[in-house]
Image 1 (cartoon, rainbow, N blue to C red):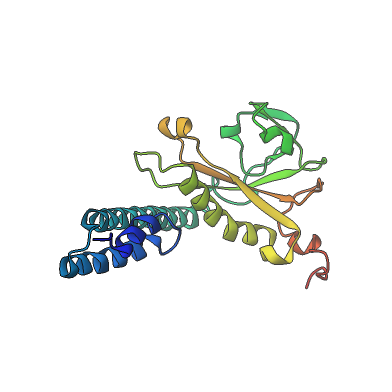
Image 2: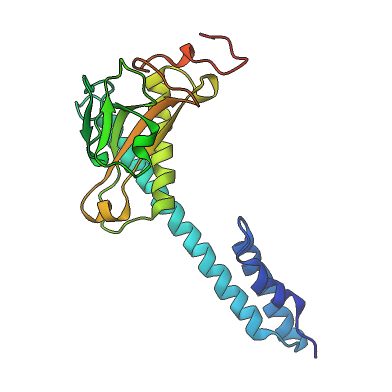
Length: 229
């Protein structure tokens, strides 16, 4: 008696991104029913496909719930704190050259790309009136959960938090300006030491800038996009 083909497929498709877990569950149930009716081999494979499918689906749901909850809580915290001196645009500024820890960068600090390559900590900052690459424009907090959520989840959360605040800061949509943003978020070690801060910073793609970037989004138009449009 041959092995049920759907049982084999159910075991193979669960790692596929997107609907792989659902396909594995559906095929596993179909194969299970066919095997019960026909007496084909592969019952163990069908059960394994079901287990893998449900496990993968559960893991995906948990990941989504964690990310969404982090976004909701962090967005609420950041919006509530935008008027506070630790979370508002332009509340602090590097008036002269200095060095600070990468975890102590403040809103308004300006610095160069090579300051974030990990080779220099403390990070050298410069006056924003001088040529620089990056400008810190807001700091938001992630939820104070105990367990480190992982680099991927934190990076997605930080990116989603920084984008709307970036567009508000520069006064232009991301797809209408040559300015861009990135973020510094906790490492596993700093998270375990209580760090929950995400620092968002702005820069112009491939070019250094002079002066602050607040409200300057349309002063740096994308190629082919008229300034101020």
